[in-house]
Length: 394
Image (cartoon, rainbow, N blue to C red; front, side):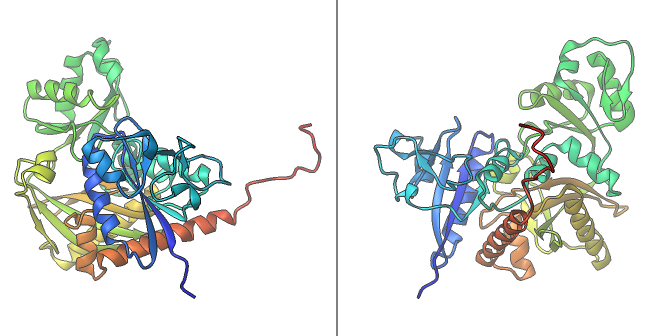
């Protein structure tokens, strides 16, 4: 008898500024999954948060043609483990409601996908899923928390300061005040002065809970600093300002595994713009990738070790792409970001680095699915109930 195919839901799109990037990544994943092993169920989420499923889900999102017949939802009820059509009078394309989902691959970059929200839903629904859990996803999505945890674990990160939008907009204070790395009780002028005094110029300004370099600016003077802070606050309620690593090289490492992850070879990105912004990543098509990165073996090994330690520190199980900034002259390196759902097109760094390490794109997907199912089975063996010695609660 033929083995039963594993039913894999690939979720993409979402309420995120990285919606379009997600669609491209998911298309590559769907095409690369071995159809002799997997029954692939494309699941799209619109920018408004509507769920739809079926073979045309990705195309419907791209064409912005969502109809009620394709709409579904995923119940948090763990006894269902399947998509349910919103319109119960209609058969969902591909007969989605007829079978349970064995595993889900969330290819949702950014908010409502990479931040622990969909991971929480999948935990409630009792469906295995690829990538980091709720804690690791949430920690890595917030660059402030991510850097604090990594620094406490002895992993070097660029120096930074942060503040809340309400403090910036109130523009009132009683003098220079910093609580650890947080700026509070300051006017905007005082904040800018504290940033420049601590970090110097230039600095990078980022919305902490954003990806694909959306909302990021590089300020060379105080006027640019103010402008970039205002731009970042369009995307987040907080702002992080990071010291620019001088004459930096951008080094990336792919990490794979649960409790005992392993690291790929190092890769280097040579951006076509002043830094690796959104256009340099996706639009201009002129940035250069060097795989493997031209590094001394001992330095490459140290960076790969730091990548694994960073992933373990934030519990980014499954997969992660770890980005470093390397000082060209001193060879000091700093962990810049940990991405728990990295780009997954055929030309994205995460799969390309594994291909250079000896793991093909399709074999990488096989392993990610296996890791997801293994972690789910481990958690299923844990007790979720407790019987006290008396029924005191009745």
